Length: 104
Image 1 (cartoon, rainbow, N blue to C red):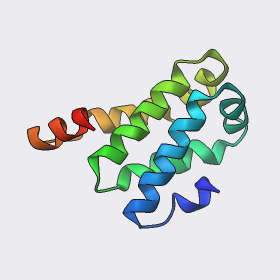
Image 2: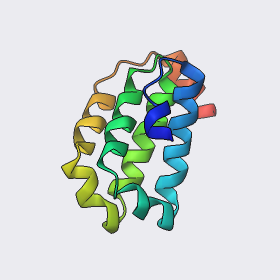
Image 3: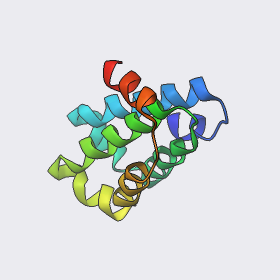
Image 4: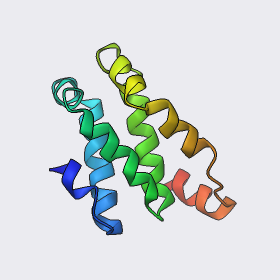
């Protein structure tokens, strides 16, 4: 469902999808199912169009979680996970937003 909902241009929906993907990436059973669906990482990367830096950071955490586990690392790299992290690393975030993210 999140792969479809992540396409919507609605900030609360994008945030919810990012958080769901993040939860999935921390659960062994769910993560193994996620990596069976190549469209999932594509949908996750599309959440970077969000105007909310917190959503973008949750996407980054999710990719890091996927790369941190042996059973999902190859899939994540093959499906563009490094490019997602690169895009996040190159984003400019002002200090106020950065402080808000760290406290949230």
